[in-house]
Every structure is written in structure tokens, then in C-alpha cells.
Image 1 (cartoon, rainbow, N blue to C red):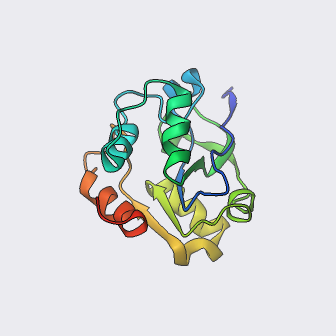
Image 2 (tube, rainbow, N blue to C red):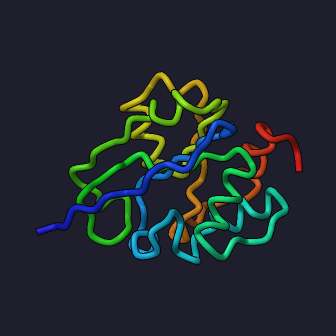
Length: 161
């Protein structure tokens, strides 16, 4: 029998201008207790580089990086059954209610970190599509990742850096 896992609460505040949505935390992220916990995932390196900040070493440092720059972070899936970390292994997913963030923060843009997050958003919250962009996954399993695509999308929101 496959075990059911819960995701993380969203990180956002009243200054969040962009919402980055993943699919569901990896095994390493669930063990760490925070988003993008696999050191091979490019997410924190990419975001730190864009904002010209040091790579945060702690969960609190990661929260500060996000909130200090107007970035909200969440996953499309609140809970699911999954073996390992691959999106194609997700079953019985419960999708989050995006209104929890979109209704309480001045989000101007949603960036989906990978195809699964984008597909779930398109299916469950199509009203958010006009402000949404599908981004290449920062997962170490994605050979098509391109940092410049992320930098361009973030630059459209926060200005060129």
C-alpha cells in the first residue's frame, strides 16, 4: 500500500507579487520539512542568483529570501500518495485552493515550476491562466532546465537584474 503524504503551508505575505507553484515536495524536501530540500535542485541557487543574495543555509533564511523579495511559494498538491519523488508517481492528489494566496496577496504573476504544476493549475484554476507562465522545472531530473528562462520571467516582474 502506498503511503499518503502532506505538503507544506504556503509562504507569502501582504507584499508577495509573484507566486511560484511547484507540484509536491520531494522525498528530501519532506525529510527537511521545507520546499526544494534536495541540494541538487536548482531552485534556491537560481533565486539567490537572481536577487544577488547569498544561498540561504536554513529554512528561516529561505523564508527571508522569499518574503524579502515579494515571492510567495506553494505547491499545487496539498496531499497525495506517492512513491519516491517523481511527479508521474503521484496518485490520489488533493489540490490546494489558490484563493488562500491569490485572495490575500497582491500577486501579479504565477510561475509554475514544471509541467505538473501548470497542468493542475490549468485544470483546477483556469481563471489564473492569464497571469500564469509555465517554467522549466528546477528539478535535477530535468535536463532542459535553463536559468535564463527563470531570470527573464522574474525580471518581467521585478525589473532586470
